[in-house]
Length: 337
Ligand code: ACO
Image (cartoon, rainbow, N blue to C red):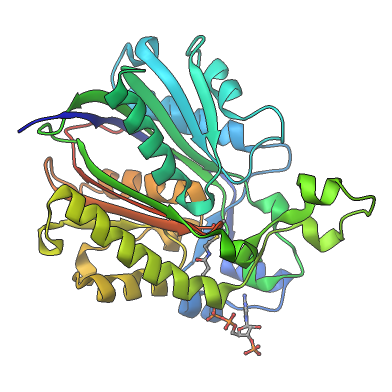
């Protein structure tokens, strides 16, 4: 029986032109191409040039998604949700600026801060708005500019993160349509908030008279601990999303997990009991782009013709917070630009 649902109607990705290879990083810090490839799977990433901010990447990806959704789409976009851990500034949010620059008029616009889980959280926000009838179409964008927040002295983060943006247009439709979101699962555990953190600019530090320590201006991460949580939380969340959709794991055609580390995706495939050939990977080309990673991976795989209409996709993510989230959807008939 069909029910109201959000339906994927357009998709687009954008990475800034500057490519940074592992060799380039090896010349700047004590690391090597062999270590980075073996421990993370990353071969290169893109970094935005000085002066380029998250909204600039979000606008580019948003343009592409609107175009993919078909002519006239900007007219009936009712909401813009930007998922980001690296907004242009503290106040105001990045989404209203992105909406204005895309010419979308006086739409609802908000940022979602859920670390690398941001895109799935934003997708859930959009789905809820569509099903509730607040909007006919929603533009969801995951966008990050990590380069300015990477400590050049911390090789464990500097080699991992990349910049980019991925965007999707969702429209109000029904659950039996190709492209419909079938289920969502979201969760968090703030007891582990220090595992991935960038404390320097928040009200906690600003409320004291002490100047923040210079290292607190950069992202820091307990990679080993995060790794363990990542696999466990994504596997558990995936199981919940699949149960809500009424799908067995062997019915999933493609698993699109957060692109944090190739070894995490391998371990996730083992935990889920999914053949590795069904796991989409894009991290080799772009590194960990946080909230942009799932839409960028989707756009890349779609561009390669990997998805067929009505294929079953499982999206799953985790990130700073800790947060995690998963969604089950079928693949729509869409054209990428
Ligand atoms: N080059 C060379 N050596 C390195 C590098 C590097 N870039 N980075 C660390 N090392 C060294 C360490 O110093 C350590 O050396 P030691 O044994 O002499 O002490 C050794 O390599 C092993 O370090 P580990 O931290 O144990 O390496 P690990 O295999 O765990 O890989 C990594 C580190 C890649 C960070 C991994 O733990 C990981 O991917 N974790 C998950 C991160 C993640 O998914 N984050 C997502 C959330 S982020 C968000 O939400 C914004």
